[in-house]
Image (cartoon, rainbow, N blue to C red):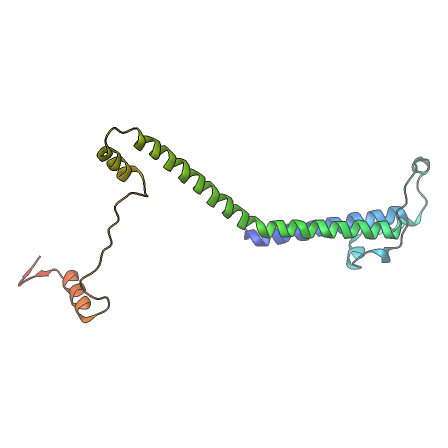
Length: 177
């Protein structure tokens, strides 16, 4: 399975190719030369039959239908709008992870606030302050007891290495366990 970014790149490339082919079809239907397109490499990918069909007159059934011919300015404007849409989509895709992280943070904050409000309501219902404080210590992270461990031996010192060696060995005093 390809990496997600590689799959994304493949999808973007396929989308760009399809868009170019569609713009070529529009250019072919309107009778504009192939030089109007953005890239000449796409013209090589078209079938030879498609080029021959543009040079001939439309069939009699299609000749009766009013076909709107696009001007070069209209096609250029459509191309520009498509490029702007593509840039907006790419920008939205780049901003999506940050927006998702922001939504997750906000969701966690809302859940924490709701939890604290329910604990506050439970505490206010208790008849004695001692029971209320016990409940608060049990349930609320805001009131939990915090213990900070301060080691008696400095880290990475000779005493620390000696203690580590003693704890790692199976010998206790003059006896082995």
